[in-house]
Amino acid sequence: MNKEFIWNYLTKKNRCLLNYNYPSKKPIFELIKLVNDRLYLWGAEGYQLYTTVRDVCVKKKGNLAEVGCYLGGSTMLISKAKGNNTLYVFDTFEGLPEVRSIDKSKNKWECDFFKGEFKADYKDVKNFLKKEKKVYIYKGIFPQKNKEIIENKKFIFVHLDVDIYSSTKDCLEFFYPRMESGGVILSHDYSTAKGVRKAFDEFFKDKLESVFELAGSQCMVVKK
Image 1 (cartoon, helix red, strand yellow):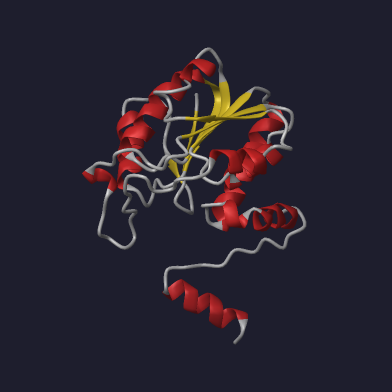
Image 2 (cartoon, rainbow, N blue to C red):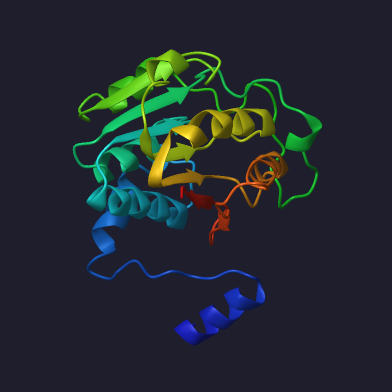
């Protein structure tokens, strides 16, 4: 089975292969493979997360945040890419809160979330990340809890992986006015979760910024 056949077959199935063997890309993908058991992102999404953080932090110094870390795989990628910047991490560690009808779907291409999904062990995640510098992890639904820790700070990067409409909306309302010019909000599930897409599209409808849909399920916003 030759490469051309594989490429043609996958294209017909609306799928594609990506090559991460380039010298600049391979070390990053090796890191992604190392955290794969704790990463709830596709490999390409993990790569997008890492390189976005890396490239933002090349020119900007400041605070980063992640809401929805689950097992800590995405947190590790952000930590390895952030340099000497500080990362604040928030998760319920009790799984998803109450979900609405907008967060559920019987379409096989869309997420069908339920309350308590993605529950994780707080102590286990903290232990996994204990050697990472300037990474602070907090338990509780954000921003209803723990917002006082960062409400007076500005941010250069925020990663959202909160899955549902209400949490996405709450996080956008909290972080948007605290983003520095040129700062980036990157979210998972924009293409696959109706609630996430609805929250972003509604929030940015009257804003200057565009919501950029990326190749995986992610979206990105760059603060003007």
